[in-house]
Amino acid sequence: MKRYLAAGTALAALIASTPALAQTSQEDLANLVRAQAAEIASLRERVERLEVKRIAQADAAANAAPQVAAAVPPAARPNVVTAPYAAQLAPPGPADRDIARVRAAATEAVGGTTEWGAGLPVFHSADGQFTFKPRGRILTDVSTTTGSKDDGRNLTTTGMRALRMGLEGTVGPHFFYQFETDFSENTVDVVTAFVGWKNRIAPGLDYDVRAGHLFNDRGFEGSTGSDSTPFLERTVVATAIIPQRAFYGLGVMPRLFWKTGHASLTVTGDRIDGDQTTSDNRTVLARAHWNPIKSARQVLHLGVWGFDEMLQPGRGTLTRNTVIGGRFNGALRLSTGTITGGTGTTGYGIEVGGYSGPLWIMGEAGERHARLDGGRPDFITRAWSVSGGWFLTGDLPPYNPRLGSFGQPKVLRPVFDGGTGAIELTARYENLEFTNIETPAQGWAATIGVNWYLNSFTRFQVNAIHWNTENTAGTYVGKDDGQTLSARVGVTF
Image 1 (cartoon, helix red, strand yellow):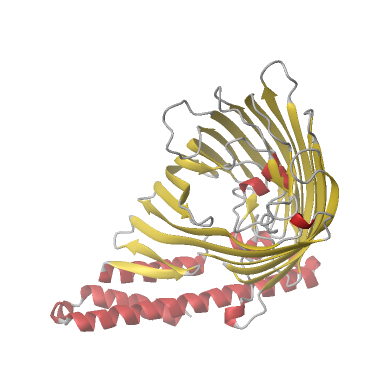
Image 2: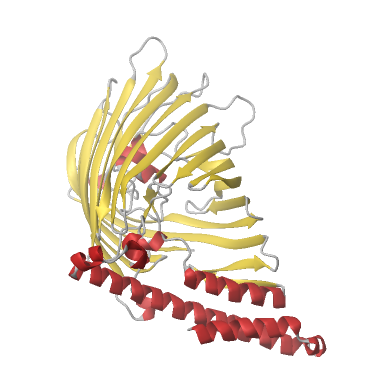
């Protein structure tokens, strides 16, 4: 492999320094650029395959003879054994630095580079000061419900969970930005849209500050993107213990990162809208997570979060219709009936979980108090859930220790390279209740599922849900239960 690296570096230097290049035609130059790009792509593919093979060999050696590994000095052990994080989240190693040197030489020669990662190109400027990457997300669902005593709930529907287009980029080492628009309801909806600044305070202590339309940092699944959740819909803790403005708000969010966790503080107004005739509602939200155990194949996750929301007079509608058995059945909800006169909400929650090898588990619980005018008691929402998964193919769960949430998996044997992909079995139980109101409601759902990740950004998901509801308001009153079968194909760029 060193011969390939030397050849790539020499070729780049030759292109940059040879005077005769000035006399080369545009067509010849284009051919040289294409040849260099192909060489870099081939080199990257070879290095990645070698890294996967090295990690697999290290894991096998560690599992087969742990006493031998313990006898080897730490400095001599493979990174996958001693690194305090999941393998797919390791920092750049020697192979990555070699690729970077080849890329830098080619960039200097041709004035910029383009590489392909996660399905879309990433553009780098010649001086390394600018990067730009398109973003996209396509999540297509189908759902069918049976067993309800009310025929109006026994529906078969389809829908787009997400249909996003966007971009992200950097300017220099500190400034970054991101923008995404969603078209899933056949309307234009601006979701993530912010600019940010990041820097290092000290070794192992970093920060960033983002300003714009921001996604909540609230709970484990509440902080996980819709394209990364292990189930088709987030847990009821994420969907019910939430500010009235829901998942997004326009404001500022500073975040602090250390080796075993992070903390964030968010201050926002409303979502992006066209109403500037009244004051925005105000939401203050904070979250912190800590990994007291953090090794190559084991992580313990602990988290706490809370928010306080002030609602402007006349804008305090607190009516809730919360998903309990599938997003794409509008008749299948846990409902409160109409609740007006809200003055604010306060919510809080905890997270406890982690993973060991291919097995993960996560428990979440939360409570929300919605304050009502006229001296009425608080409207209270309580929710909790326990979730788990097991990768049959031995892949590690896609846990992101920097953010304390799930991300995209690092599939060891992608289907497009002739492998099996990653296959995961999942299960979840969740419980939700609305109390202290004239029309209370309660419900629960039990879900089993299977996820097949073809590679790190393409997946198929199937969820089978048994749900139980008891509403005292709305169209479907009384106790009811049934089954919902849902499936999804998703691609994230």
